[in-house]
Image 1 (tube, rainbow, N blue to C red):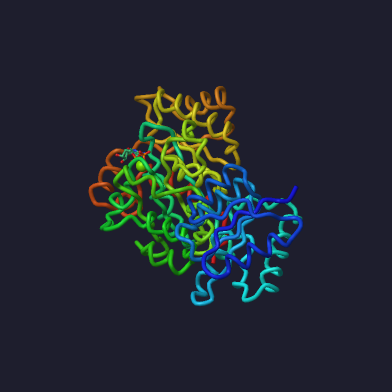
Image 2 (image 1 turned 30 degrees about the vertical axis):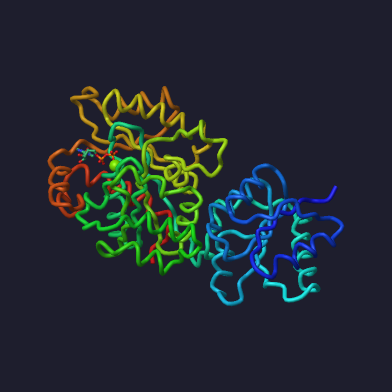
Amino acid sequence: MPVGVLCAVQGAAEAALVQAVEGDGRLAVTRRCADVVELLAAAEAGLGRLALVSAELDGLDRDAVAALHHAGLRVVCVADQDRPWLTDRLAACGADLVVPPPGDPGAARDVVGRAGALLDAPDRVPDRVTGPVAPARRGRLVAVWGPTGAPGRTTLAVNLAAEIAALGRSSLLVDADTYGGAVAQVIGLLDEAPGIAAAARAAAAGTLDVAALARLAPVASQGLRVLTGIARADRWPELPATALDALWAVARSLVDLTVVDTGFGLERDEVLSYDTRAPQRNAATLSALAAADVVVAVGAGDPVGVARLVRGLADLADLGLEGARLVVVNRLRAAATGPDPHRAVADALARYAGIGEVLVVPDDRAACDAALLAGRTLRECAPGGPARKAIAALAARLATLVPAR
Ligand SMILES: Nc1ncnc2c1ncn2[C@@H]1O[C@H](COP(=O)(O)OP(=O)(O)O)[C@@H](O)[C@H]1O
Ligand SMILES: [Mg+2]
């Protein structure tokens, strides 16, 4: 039985390509699609294994290419001679092959032959981490995650990124919390538009490169760039996983260390999972965790916080996200955990979560409040305070991931 080809090519090339497919004994056109919506519907219905698409097709972005791949198709993109930049864009979006528009039947046969050859190639590796640009240097990525209950993800992410910059590693702080990003406010940035939404849009369109990301992530202080988040929680659909996967790859080229402040939720929207294109609220968090070289898992230093952390660590493991991980208990205080708080939380996490090493950040209300009030970091506001000292020590550990310049 011939292999099905979905054809969503516009203009004169369409007829030539359809004819060439029909002339190829192995292939047959199973659907001629007018737009991306029809193409994706046919792909998800299992009607083909090869998609021939025009570069200028509306809505053909990284997410659409990923959905085609997910449905088991190879994607061959026919470039537009008048708009050569579309070629780079489509390659960046993950197309398997970008070909020039065929000018005559011979060229059309040639295109179809090359497209057909893709089917013989070994299965493609899912493109979770391939970015639009080959990273010139491979910076590292740290995701700061913690369960619900405000354990101090943002405080940790902001101050870790600032400390790492102070240690001479360039850092990028990304607010990827889809439940109420607060990074801009915490570090006193005037946030006119969420940088991460703009970066995700560019990544989806295949136009996010190092220069574009640098423009969207202003320098907050020496060595520290910030990509602000979505403060309005209803904007979460603007952060799809496919776009963020690409963002992390570009971030690695821009800076030595990217620190991502994530949301707390880890569950997938199972109800919607039949629809691979449906946005997922926790996609940003899951994408950051999957990409991270190290996950900093932070819990609050009280009995409820520690219990939530134990469950959260199990959830991370269930998702296969238990790679390199540092467990931090924040706001640790004797009043909530007993006379030897470090020992108490270390024992509980060893017993219930099998954690060998627990790092702690003491409760330091005065310093954290002063920092919040001033919109500054702890190292600026309370450099000698206990919270700052503990976070600086953690940053020094993370900085060993990347060599000093
Ligand atoms: N070590 C600490 N000592 C005292 N207060 C802290 C500490 N860490 C965080 N906080 C405070 O706890 C609150 C929640 O912290 P935040 O970082 O916003 O949590 P999350 O991002 O997890 O929701 C903030 O008011 C913050 O200043
Ligand atoms: Mg937060």
